[in-house]
Image (cartoon, rainbow, N blue to C red; front, side, top):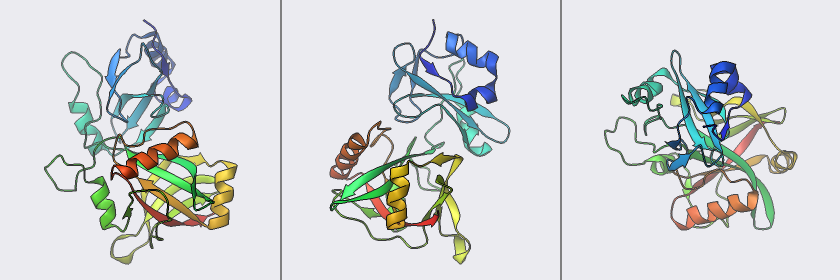
Length: 257
């Protein structure tokens, strides 16, 4: 049965036309799946579904997501991160899904109105729970880890958070390249998040960034925000996450142009 699959050009280039056509025809695609973004069930026979290809040094894993959560894309991860996903392939041939350890940071851009001013914002939400490095537990420590880095918990989106020194947003030629964090032992900044391919920023977003020379960064645990198609829906999701105690934020200087 044909599936309601989105296969981006970059995914097709990696898996080949033949495999992509088999997926679209329903030969190799699952009916039901767990969304690699929000972790809730999906059905590619009933709703638009994105193919998301995770690529390591030697291994590639094809996962599926609600099209409303993630676009079809290729995501570069480390080989170590992919090994757990490969081990999750079951004997009956169910496609591999990323396990909680293989979280990928999803980034959404938009304008947020605070105090009558429009600010450029980035919203970061992982595709799975983030556990503390070295921990054997399963608790999601994404927000506590960011608070330790200087991010501020929000109970409402009504004030601009303080500037977080040492962090920055790298924008070059109108494209978003990376979110940088301080290097270890005072070294050069390193990428906390880096785009697989630079993301084109909207003209209105770039104009706001040029005006303020700063970018609002919001972060929430997996399943708190989702991929919202409109800025009013994004704001509603941010307000809800804040009210539920699931939102932290910081103001990051703009690096680049």
